[in-house]
Structures are given as structure tokens and as C-alpha cells.
Image (cartoon, rainbow, N blue to C red):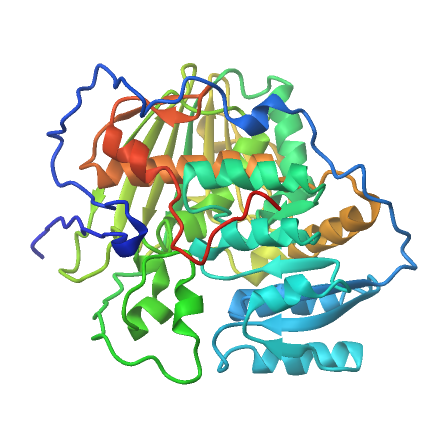
Amino acid sequence: MKRRKFFKLATTGAAGLTMAASCTNQKKDTDSGISGPDLPREVPAYRKSKTTAATSVKQRSANDKLVVALIGAGHHGIKVITDAAGLGENIHVKYFCDVDDTRGGYGITEVGKIQGIDPLRVRDMRRVFDDQEVDAVFIATPEHWHGLATMWACQAGKDVYVEKCISHTINEGQQMIEMARKYNRIVQCGTQNRSSDYAYKARDYIKSGELGDIISVHIKELLDGPVPFVEKEEAKAPDTIDWDMWLGPAPKVPYSVSRNKSWGYYWDYAGGHVMAGGIIHQLDMARLVLDDPGFPKSVFCSGGRYFFNDERDVPDYQMATFDYGNFTLTLETGECTPYMKKSGPEIRFSDDFPEWMQNATRIEILGTKRMMYVGRMGGGWQVFDKDGQIVAQEPGYYPLEAHIKNFLDCVRSRNEPNGNIVQGHNSSVLIHLANLSYRMGNKQLTFSPEYEVIMNDNEALSLSRQNYRKGYEVNESM
């Protein structure tokens, strides 16, 4: 098969910023750094405040019913809200909100069976935010809506469970933290491995020094494939969908079933089907077991559309390398490996461990003494010495229900949730940096952990800042 690389050019249209990905490393600026007004010279506003929990809001008891809503009624959103309804945590799901009338019907029926009354179906999330009875929302929209929907919810006084990748750009994540703190809101990110007991035991094992000094960490999301894709032509939006609302803060473009149903393949709506939609789980878990290191000094990401000459923006393979100074972290994602396999229910809900060599989503941690494999969403961890000898291990179970319960507990107690907004942002930044390096033509980008800005590329710096379409913005005067 002939191997080719494609770099898709996208524009923000009326939004004003040119969202262009370059095929070359020839830039107007130089690797020695940039100067002038583009580069902020102060730390992000959210880091100037140490406030972490919504402590000014009155606590609630378990006897107080929580009224919640789902925003984004796709497969995963329905799974999350159905699990929440079935936990016996004294909640009532009042709304299913989705701009597409064809989605969510099954979930409404299932939740209705659990609570004895069907949730109401609405199109516009602002109706949910205007309802003073609603205490919290679960946001499972396409990724480009995560940040704005979260901030609107915070402004409306709602606590939030928001799916990963929580933001679409670096500065959007910063703004989300500011809004959560300004309005004293609980925000739980959908990085559910942070509610895994075995992850914290892995962290403690590493902190004990039994692995030695950590020198490298390798994180994988290598899926079945290759996966063909044929972009559908533009067409009139069906009456069953509010296409303008679906686009929301993204550039206004004609309806396309490809954009609607395969949004994870377009930069306008996602940070990559596999990168932001998948490996973010392992990345966040790896950061947890490493005791949440800060930001890297630089990133280099290579990859491309190696297997199909199609119209997808995102690559079908990426390899990103992050320099943390005293260790290196890599992300490897792809959809071209049919011999790799995610852990199934027989691993996720048992004391068994994966076959690590061909496990599609494993984390490898290499120390100067021993190495550790870690599984996500169950699978536990094992430590290996010479000759494949297992010297320590801990099984693990799928943590979604525990993560949802932690969120509901924190809505009542006002304690900081396991998947708090700051750590969700910190993990999302790495995804954004990897994609920006790729989009700049596989250019190594230097990064300021203090200022949270890209230091050596003006175009990448511009793309790291959110620009909302008119009518879909944050009113910061609220």
C-alpha cells in the first residue's frame, strides 16, 4: 500500500481566526522564540487563586433529591445517565436535551422505567439552564460544545459532569476553571479512572520507590482498523435537527451527515477521534499514577493519513513525545492495528489481567529497577522484574459507576470531586499540544509551564486560543 500524508486545511469562516494546518516547518517565526504582544507574560488567571471546591454553597443530605439533566443524548451519554439513574442515589432525571430529535428515545424509555416517569425531551440546552429546579447536568455533547456548555451551566448555578476531552483549546480549559470557581460549582470531568482504587494503589507503589526512578512512560490507544471513510456531500439539514445549534460555537457551514455523525474526524469539532476521544483516558490515568506531574517543556508529534486518501482532518496514526525534563512521556494512537484489542468485560469486571503485549490501551511505566503495566477502565496493574517475574500486582474494575457516584456525593457535600476540573484541564492540554505539533507540520513546540503558552510558533499559539461564533459566546458580565 502506498503511504501518503495529508494535512487538512480548515478555516473558522465568520469566526475570524484562520485555522490552517501547515504541511511544512517553514514558519515566519523562528525556533528561538517569539516576541511581541502575542505572548502573555503572566500566569493564567485561574492559577492566581487557590480556591478548589464550591465551599460557599450549602451542603445537602442524602435525603435531598437531586434534579439532573442529560445534555447530548448519544450512546455514551445515555449510558452515563442511565447508570446514574440506577444507582439509587435519590436523583430525578428531568430532561434529555439533544438538538437531534432522532437521538435519545431509548434512553428516555430506560430512565423512565427506573424512575417511574419519562424525562422531558428538549432541543436547546438553555431551557435546562433556565430551570431553577435543575441542580446538575451531565454534558456528553460533541467535544466542541464541552467548554461552552460547561461555562453556561456554571453561570446558571448548575454543577457539571463533563465528558473528555473537556476543552477544545488550551485557553478554553483555563476559562472553564475560572467559571467553575467564580460561580462556586462542582465540575467532575469524565476521566473515570480517577475513581479507580487500583490507580491510587499504583501511585503509592511508584511513590514507594520500588520501580526506581521513572525514566519513560508509554501510553497507547491502538484500535482495530484500518477504517475507511467517504465524506458525504453537503445537503439540506433534516427537519429533525437544529443544525445551527449543533454547530454552536464552531464555524457556520452547510449540513453534512459526515460532520454530523463522524464529527470526531474534524478539527472544528474535536481533537481527534482516537486522541481526544480515547487516549485521554490513559493519559489522565498515567498522570494520576505519576502523582500528577505538571506540564512538559516541549512536544513533538508526527503522523499522518497513512492508509486512506480521504477527507478526514485527523491522522489515522500519531506518535507524540513530551519532554518533562527528568522523564519522557509518549502517546501512540491509531486505527490501523486489527491485531490489537481493548480489554473486554471478562477483564474489566474480574480479577484477571490483560495480555499486555497486544492490549490496545495499555500504559507502560519504565523505572530504573522494574517496569509496570497499567490497564484503563479495569485490568489492574502488574510490576515485572527480570525474566518476566511478577513482583507486585493489583486487579481493577470498571469505575464508571463509582465516578458518577463520586460526582453526586460531591454535589451534596461540596467536596472536590475525583476528576476535578484542574486535572481535567492539565490532561487536555497535552492532547491539544500533540495535535498542534502535528498540525504545524510535525514541528517541535516549546511550551511554558508557567504561562501555559506555546513559545516558538505564532500560528500554533493562535490555534490554542478559543474563538466562539457570534451568538454562542460566554457573557462574562453575568
